[in-house]
Length: 340
Image (tube, rainbow, N blue to C red; front, side, top):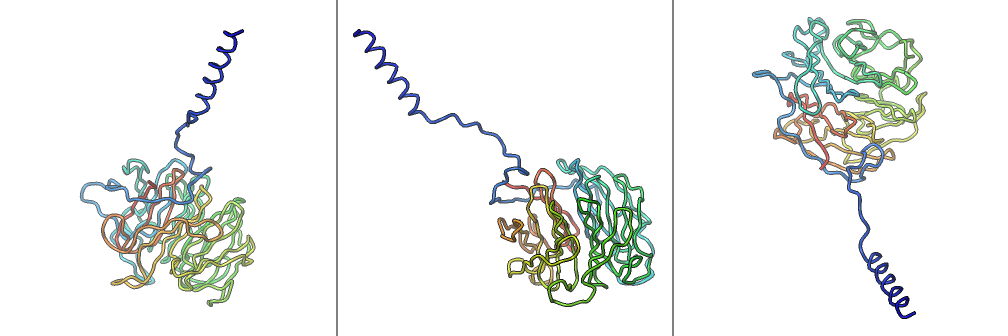
């Protein structure tokens, strides 16, 4: 009996000792798109991309990432922005492709096709969507540069189903609907079926009332079909339903003049802000990460020419791995940022 009591005491002590120890914790990197941190801190990746020896980018107007973590850059090569109506096509490649991890160049194409490159998106099938504000057109291209569709009439501005006036950007809805922000000449969003049939428009008059625009510069669609428009000169982002009904408006000093917006696979909105920093009023370099209610979760970068600073913010893209890419039109470069 005495031995049984001793054994019971020892067993109890052993169990209590185990309970007193901290539990084992399995350490693993979280999957960003499923359980992202609300707060994240970003730093620039130096020496990205790896450009060929002696090569310099032109004015970088667009950047996008495909499902294979390949980063496409839309730039103006040796041409500087011009509103002249009869410019010849740019003879050099205007679309470059880089490996997102290493920064090594994979491909270069788009020569003798574009006049004034502007917007760039990649859809779920890895097709490229590009806008040219000199040609007043929107182009759909395959992953390797084959032309698949053209919207708009070359060098002929207008405001109907077959004409644009300096279109700025494209977004593709989950059902394949094509949304075009149009743009510098017009102040509307034009909507097309997946095969390019004109479905209508909203916001055709320039203004600052809800649903009106003063330079719709960038456009994005979230997983629920909501359409986000960077209404640049009104210093706000307007959110619409699929048919153009206003759902909400984001406007704040921190948001400033939003030049570009994208909705990433992690379910957050990423915005690059133009600001009013000197010596180039209207351009700048604050990057914001927001939830879809408009709450700012992270902010980084500022105006400047050093690595990690942005001189002329113009476009933003986010890879599935969470890396953020900024197209700097005046700095003539693209930079990669990753969360710490």
